[in-house]
Image 1 (cartoon, rainbow, N blue to C red):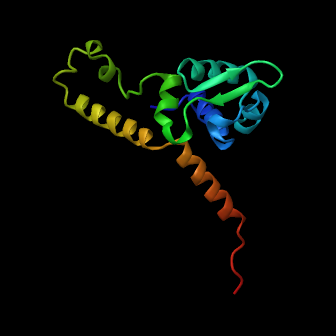
Image 2 (image 1 turned 120 degrees about the horizontal axis):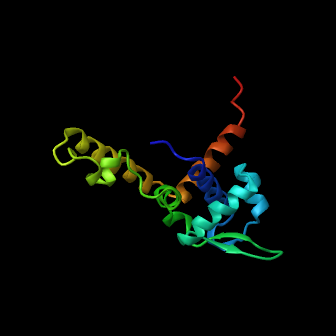
Length: 149
């Protein structure tokens, strides 16, 4: 499984909103596009999908932009990625057992299911609040000069 460009852009969009006080602040489309290096036309499509999923609100007008509807500490990477690409699966037979005549007796199918479950669990455990915190910590550490001897 490879994360799509749309999935990556959605994560960048939500990261930008989470960094800017989450549900408290409306962030302009231009700021989100610049922060995430997202083409404007692509951002509009992604924002529509995130809005339909109840993750962001799209506000129109001169003071318009995007605002998170879910607090960053309650919003996971899994929520955002699956809002864009749908439910994660590693093989067709996992999501559609009828697509493979051997899926019910296939030993590999159990491996696909376990790997999928582990990936989903890992992504579900990572919130945007945690990502923002880690990003801030890394940025601070990179600005600290090494001690002189």
